[in-house]
Length: 137
Image 1 (cartoon, helix red, strand yellow):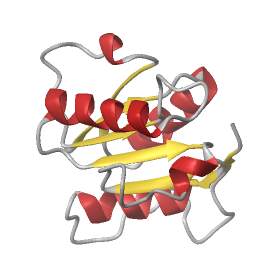
Image 2 (cartoon, rainbow, N blue to C red):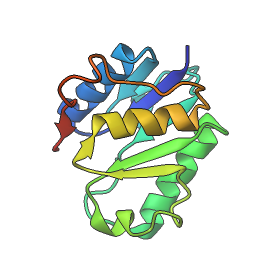
Image 3 (cartoon, one colour):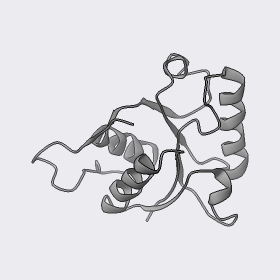
Image 4 (cartoon, rainbow, N blue to C red):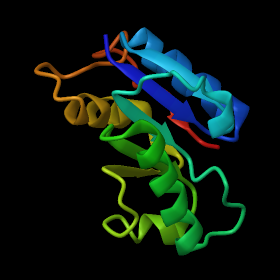
């Protein structure tokens, strides 16, 4: 089972991501700050908001991604953010994927499965029925 670290300073988004990933069969460890994640936590993938940013700064965003790379090594990183300027710099921030808030949960799960090299597409429980929720925070 793949282990995913989830970081977001919005507790509602954090809980939703934790629930969605767990229901999709992933083991998730979540926190509002990097210090909330146990030091010995292993990550096969990291999903993170640009937590330290209140106002967008490219330098701070790059430093955040670098700190995640230092902590979790080669684990792919997906950034979820509402910062429009960050979304325009998809290739420059060093993340393996980026999604704007609000984002579609099914799209996130497809991106997660792709980055983890899953042979089968991961679906939100109940796929084929109503669409999963869209995160609006």
